[in-house]
Image 1 (cartoon, one colour):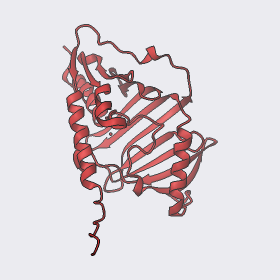
Image 2 (cartoon, helix red, strand yellow):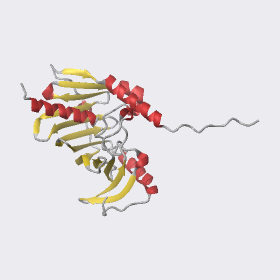
Image 3 (cartoon, rainbow, N blue to C red):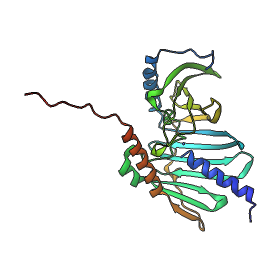
Image 4 (tube, helix red, strand yellow):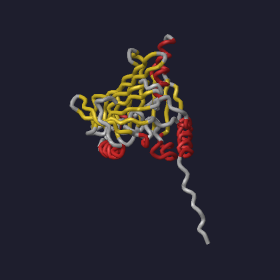
Amino acid sequence: MRNKPFVSKVVLLAVLLSCYLFAGNMFLVYAEESVQDVIKLIQERSQDIKSYQAKFNLNMKGPQGEMAMNGDIKFKRPDKLKMELSLVNVPDAKQLMISDGNTMWQYVPALKMVSKIDINALKKEFGDTYLSQTKEDISQPLKDVEENSLRYLGKENIEGKEFFILEAKPKALPGGEKTPFAKIKIWIDSESGLEQKAIFYDEQGKEALSRKFGEVKTNLEFDNSEFVFSPPEGVQVMDMTDNTREMLEAQKASKEALAPLPPEVSPPSN
């Protein structure tokens, strides 16, 4: 039987991924009206990316210390995804997330546990918002932020590549719950429109979480078979479709509650 600390770390890896399924003088500050131009440019360029693969690193800081994950990502539009993750310094604590566009699977080998989400069913109900675990899609670099709060901080050159730097408030959690982050800063490749890294800050302005992507290769020819998964024999399979549906319904209700009311129209006078 595996020792408890190891199992705890594996469980923590699963929890982290599920929850995550969430300027100095060197920057030139631009006029507020330039933000929309930058957003438009980023969206136009990222739409040209049909597939990519990249290395992934997630680092979390908290009262218990630091926790880091490394991984590999493959993505093919519109919604094929394969992520292999592991806790740093815990090689056996691995996890696989994979979607063929119809079903999203999450597999933790050490716990012999598999969860699945019926993407097709949620797509019919919620449209493009059906996929709840898009946090690692670097072709959507503004997915975590409230776009009306975006500030363009300027550009930075890193190893010969130019990056846009933007800052914004994070989106509210499903159901309108308060997010643990107060601010997000994002570095976006000005040529491809892909996210390079993002740093999440807490209410005290301290770095609480960071994610970074490296060795990015775009528009590769992936065979669809790379995104197919069958649960191994003997594992427990849990259907998380209803749980995801509840989360998306709460998120939808929260957005509708926050939406501005239409202007009141006075009846025509006689």
